[in-house]
Structure formats: structure tokens, C-alpha cells
Image (cartoon, rainbow, N blue to C red):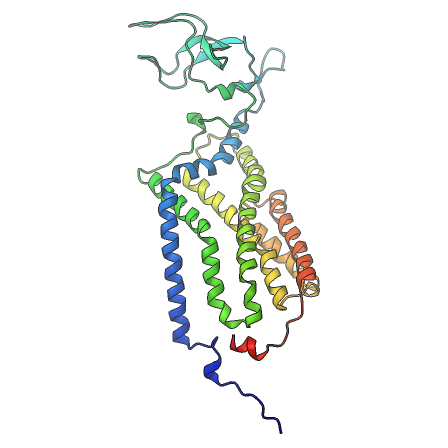
Amino acid sequence: MVQEKTIQPEQLGGQMSFLEHLDEFRRRLIKCVLVVVIAFVVCFKFSGDIFNFLEIPVLRAMNKTGNQQIPIAGQTGDEKILPLNSLKVGDKGHYIFVSDAKLGVITVAAGTSVEAIVSTDSSGNIGLFTDGVIFTNHAVIPKGIRLPVEAVELLNVSVPTESNPSERMTVTTATEPFTLYMTVSLYSAIALALPFILLQVWGFISPALYKHERRYVTPFILLSSISFVVGAAFAYYILIPPALQYLLGLGSDFQLMLRATDYFEFITLVMLAMGLIFQMPAIVYVLARIGIVSAGFLVRSWKFAIVIILIVAAVVSPTGDVPNMMLFALPMIALYLLSIFVAWFFGKKRTLPTDEDILG
């Protein structure tokens, strides 16, 4: 008679008591916090550059909205207010200082009007220059002085290197900029530490898996990290610009005073949400390789998936209109279809564990 091999409970290395699970969770959580703190210190040093990068979409939208050709009542009915980049070299007109400005040591008061011409300097750089001598109470300002208009505003460029005062976001308290940069640094640190955090999450749940299932840790971390970056980039370059253009277009009849904190909350919500949503194929890959999810299951569940996708799109979308909601829903539907293909290509049935798997 063949004696069956028995496995003692103490041999099951993956089994831990409840308190041991808590201790394991605490240790991994401390490691994650330490890595995030280190990443936070690094990101805080570059917080200004990070925020400047994040505000580019809204500056583009504000600049584009402000540069629309607006018809006005006139002699012929064809008169329009045109953007500065419609000017050409040689065009002349009156320039009005919208705020106090310094020309050398002379301060020119807001509301002052001077003759101006679009021309180039000795280096060939385009600009707006005075087209006559300006007399003040204390000095004479010669002809040909560059006026405070950025050269890119005179060219066909969508984003100025430095925003106009009217195109800057606002803060309402003295501490808001510091809090904003701290928050920018924290979110950036979490994104930077994401691979390590995912590794700790996998390490915490891996004892519940068999040995042959744990080898998917490397592709999971790699795919998840890449998917998060791709999702955040997709939101930044594809989704956010048209959404901002639509929102600012609705407010064209109002004086826009956009709070920097509100904008940052908006852009981070969308980028983080899309970064997480883009995890779908990576998660399905691991689950399909383990044998928990199959392509057939995903195909049969497509109705429920569509409903969930539309709900998520309605929550993530900054507006409730159908075009913007579909702008967020369509990428999720495409990701779901990609996940079906991933499950079909990489999926396999979950195999029964061997003694080596159990002991591993």
C-alpha cells in the first residue's frame, strides 16, 4: 500500500496569522512612506518646474481663447478684434500700457499711449518698438525702444514663454503658493515611487498565490508603471486641452480669474484617474496568466463593463456634456477591447498546484 504524502501546516510558508499579516503590512507601509518622503524631497526642489509644466495646457487654452477673432460694431460690419500674432513687420499703431512699466529708469504709467511699430532689432528678433520720441517730465525716451510685448505674441505661437498678467492664475492667500507647491511635490513623489509601491503591494499579496504564479511580479510592475505613465500622458496631451478649451469658451463672456489650486486639483484628478484606468490591460494580463480571468468572461460581461465605463467617465469628466464624457469613455472602451485581446492571447487555465508550488 502506497503511503500518501502529507503536508504539515507548519510547512505552508505562505500562511500567516492575522497579527503576522498586520506586521507585514506595517513594515511594507513604512517602506513605501520612506521612499515617498525621499522622492518628495527631490520633487520639492523642482516643484516650480513641475507646476510650470502642468500649467502649460491652461495657458495654451487661455491664450487661444483670448486670441479669438471677435466681431464688433463698425462702419462696414466686417471689423474684428484680432490677436497680436495677426500683425506683420511694418505695421504701425498706438500702444497702450495696461500696467505701469519701466523703460530704462523711467516709469510709464498705465493708460499711456505711444506710437508703435512692429519691427526687428539688430539681432533679427521681432518685437514692438516705439515709433517716435516720448517726452516725460524728467527725460526724453528715444525712438526704437522695445515695448513690453513678448515676441512670441507677435508670431504664430500658441503658448507664450511668459504669460501675460491677465493670463496668470490667481491665489487668494499668502500661504496658498507654498501649499500648492507642497501638494505638487507630493503627487509627483507618489508617481515617482509608484514602481516601488506596486512591488510592495505585490509582495504583500503574493503569499496568497502559488509559486508558479508569483513569477509574474516583474511583468506586472513593468506593465503597470508603463501603463500609468501612458495614461497620464494621454490625459495631459489628448484629453485635457479640448476639455479646457470647452470650459474656458463657456466663460468667454466673464472676467476669468482661475485659481491655481482649483486648476491643479482638476489636472491631477484627470491625470491620476487616466493613469489608473490604463492599468486595465496590465491587471488583466496577470489575472489571465494566473487563470482567474478569461477572454470569454470579458466578452460575456461587456454590457456591465460599458455601464461601469460610462459611470467612471461621468465622474472623471470635468463637465456633464456628452461630447466631453465620450472623450473619456472611448479610451476606456478601447482599453477594455485591448484587455479582451490580452486575455485571449496570454490567458490559460489555472492549473492545480503541485507540492513544490505549495511549499514554495
